[in-house]
Image (cartoon, rainbow, N blue to C red; front, side, top):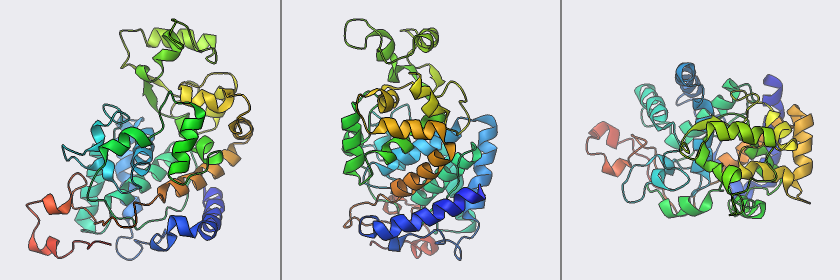
Length: 345
């Protein structure tokens, strides 16, 4: 892992120099908490390790939580807010699907006990995603830190900005471009997070039973896999779970890309990376399938890029006391805690 960390750290600074205007990287640094909360990563890692013993799926879920946060008004922990009128948790891409909120709460509580009002919820989500990848056997990278938490969520944007599991490749690329990400390598590399985790049957049942509206199967879905999936996902069981990668479901590796080459991508949004005629993503899939090191390096750099999607410049932020509630709505804040509130930026 140390080799990957050195490689990716170097690549990070290349990205920093080349795209500093967009990423506003001057505000973020892997050493941000070295003086104020030096054990932040160790604390998050310890809680994650304990949780993964009973719930191996949690690592993939935390990576997905990070993705779904960053694509909606930047990496600002807006997805964690519970406000009934604006919460992103009930947006269509998130409802009864995104998980890990309680574990983030545990991490926040532990950090408040040792570094009060210091570590933002947005940074906790970001660190937890990196540590989840490492725990599953994937690459590590130096995580830029220093984000603030938003004071609002945006359910409307959550319903429109997140790539969908049945969307055409061009639509997915447009959503990546809208947040400043690359429409080829970033799309393929970040999709590679589907090398671990689970999906509910409703996310791909159309591929099994009614792909084009005439009761047919997706022609880009392997017949053997389709038969197996119909057993797992009868029409009466669309909330059942199955592995995104049926070969090595809990490991972070490059088998996801090998699966695409034999039409064994579970979601339509996965398979189209390889099956769309003439797409520039095909060559990248082939490269990552044959070279796991190339995938790991690209994934780490793409995660840094995604992790630096920033909220609009005129939006203020804070370090929340409770990841589910903005500080102004916490009636039990003590005078000493009030004094530590972070002012708007």
